[in-house]
Length: 166
Image (cartoon, rainbow, N blue to C red; front, side, top):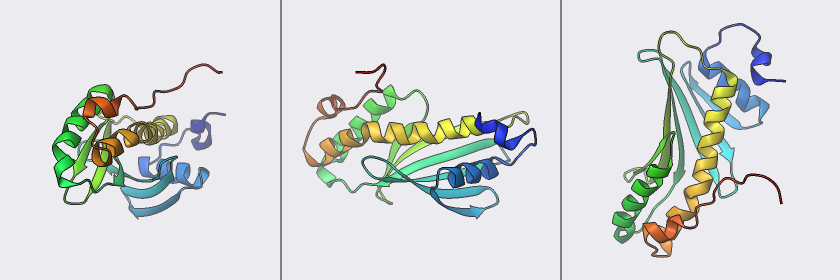
């Protein structure tokens, strides 16, 4: 059964859909306000903090997926080079490092201009892609920060999506 079948044909607020997905997946969440929700999603490497916010002004569902990272100051130039290289490989969303908050952040915005409505499948895919992408590149960032690897060397460890079966 498709996720959207759970919502029938009624038009729901995007954050209501996210809340239902969080409940269905048994994720810890907090409805911060009418237009914002924060949740914790467990990955292989760590737990990711995911926040989704609806902006009616520009009709965009914004998502940030973040995790703590406190790199040594001398690794920052290489980390920024690594971010540029990683973002060249990301087709949807992008990473940035918020030094003041000590957070690595993956950001994505789903534009729903013209009164479009986000489907549960779109939102679920958006969240899943953020976690999958964070999981894929987390080891790269760690190698740059703590093993002194260059961005080029660290990217060699990035785990590609598996296709087929063994």
